[in-house]
Image (cartoon, rainbow, N blue to C red; front, side, top):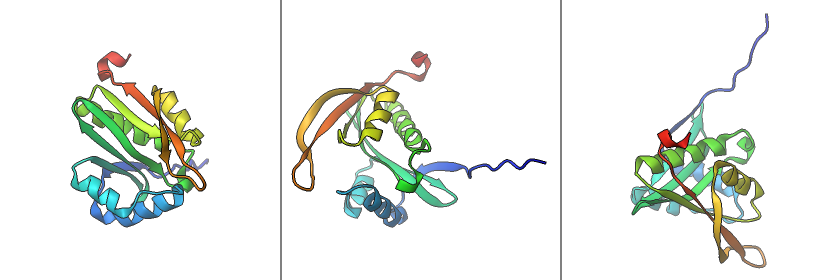
Length: 161
């Protein structure tokens, strides 16, 4: 008999105030200049699409999306460092794009550090295109780093084939 080990199933759900401590811990471990607890709280209060990916009641990633005027903006997408490289970021991004479609957004924007090669590769592989730069957007240790501005045009699921 051969035993097949399966990874526990991960699920999406809306972010809750009770998640903010765990989210803050992940954010601190993933970024040198993390969002604060208050920024996440404010995003939830503003009605942004704030979602978490959890497995066995443990948060492993999250995403924040704002939508207005037919456009959406990925404000934050993060996977706990120990969970990176397993496709969780791709799943979170797909969820955010589905939410943007649900809100009838025509396009989605985001900013990303050029030095974050894994994130740039993910966004590129999904169909985001670089449309510009924001000079000195991100803080750095001794200087600031530009942001790549990327965007994707959304197609209805039926016409994506």
